[in-house]
Image 1 (cartoon, rainbow, N blue to C red):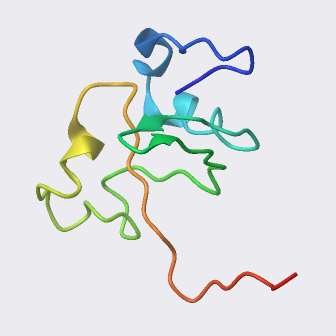
Image 2: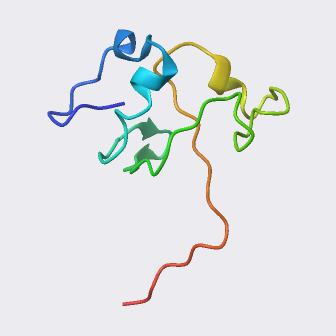
Image 3: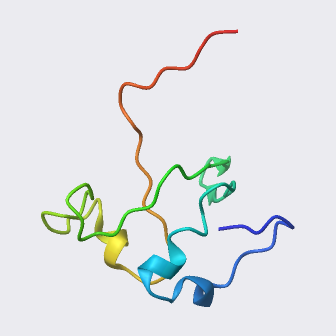
Length: 87
């Protein structure tokens, strides 16, 4: 994750109880770099892995394993049924 001044945030910032960390990403833009280059993400919600709406609620899989990994990683998924208006 990247701070507004484009410097990486320290992983220790995320090494706290989930209820303390969860509000932090909301309302901001994160710009991770993927193999194709940087991508802007605006988190719309946060979720603990043990709540019923979580993709890890029924157990960890290779896809959602990052949810129980070290602090400072994110699990992102697309939301189906959302469309973008045309210009």
